[in-house]
Image (tube, rainbow, N blue to C red; front, side, top):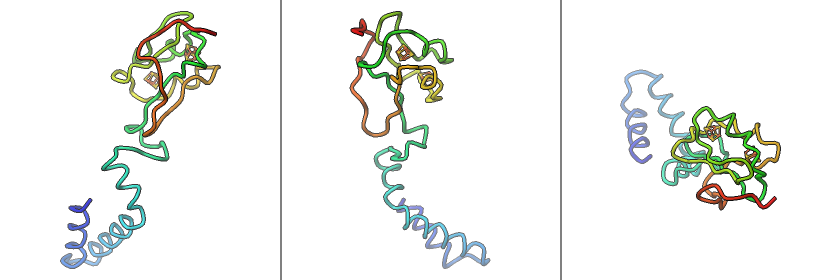
Length: 129
Ligand code: SF4
Ligand code: SF4
């Protein structure tokens, strides 16, 4: 961020055309106005709005999953582990954050998370429901 600001400040004073100056000014204004958001994305690798796919993860809530398996059918990446009557688990290494499984779950057991992650089992365990 500091480097980008430095480049823009240089552009602002050294550009040979007006467009370069205006672009630099616009970028600097954006950096200033959204300083908190830039810091969160760059330093904490988190997106508070849950918009940046790279920074969100999907999880299956153990107290809601009934082990129906519908989400597994929907996942093209084979990122969901489980079997009938077991609480399913998303393998974060395989998940591509497409979000398709969320709509497949009638129990609303699959949630998206930003910096704060829900506690979930590490591997499938029998359902209590
Ligand atoms: S997460 Fe939802 S769709 Fe997947 S097994 Fe559990 S209840 Fe079924
Ligand atoms: S978000 Fe997409 S890739 Fe990840 S578990 Fe769900 S369906 Fe599979």
